[in-house]
Length: 365
Image (cartoon, rainbow, N blue to C red; front, top):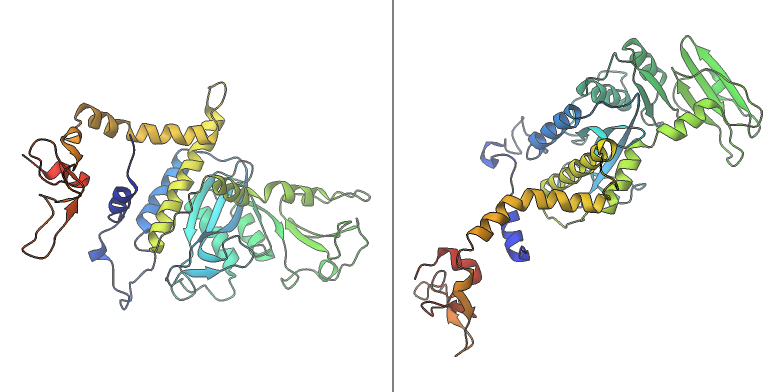
């Protein structure tokens, strides 16, 4: 059983998440550029948390849903594969890449103003953990230098959450860490209460890498990477791992509507998270590949619809090609009087009137 491309595209035109008539207009102070997809994002975030309890190590990063569509949310990130798109802040499990929360970035114009002195990265991390209800449970969050700061480390520690991440040189830190210039393989440590700071220069890098952690201790080892550096390399890539797995089976369907692009992206995230759950808990031997898993999901979702079509084949046998001439007027959709003439190369096998394939279900002899 196949689904014709044109019919699929006709059905896809009517895909909506909300009633568009109830969305505030652009000139309304309550206008939200993500209002067409926000109910779906909120629903998916709740389900991601409902079905999975993550391990201790988590990672926070950004991801980009590639599009060049016209929207106030459009961002340009040259380091990403799709440089233009809609940015999401993502909280994921570090080891498996299971996504726990996705918050859409509305753009500078529509994002709420931050309190004075609060960095955007700090606000993002705390909001992600709050919405996932993972604060005060001693989870361990890994972040890159966009998010990490001493203030974030202190704020999370108060809420019984550990932080490990890299630091930008312009962030506040002790001078012995900021100005450290050790030989390759050498490490400088500093401590402020429960917060450890580290400056390390790898053998193959010219610049010093600066890190902050409320979890690890200073361990000296000659010509070896510190424990904090190895841990960061192992656990920072949860979101990147999820994006990498997404890229393998992403259809990259072109959409002129940005919100449809986001909807399809969320469907793919759901499928990927579902496969991660299956992979961890299945008793199948051998374990299904992700491709086979997706096929079975599709077959399961369409089984009832296809079985109904097989039990009620309808009028498929009522159509045949026109033989005596090339085309006939379709008895259903053609209207010569009003100038809407529609020609068909097929006809009804019972009454021999012209009939399109898509008009069969509306025709009665």
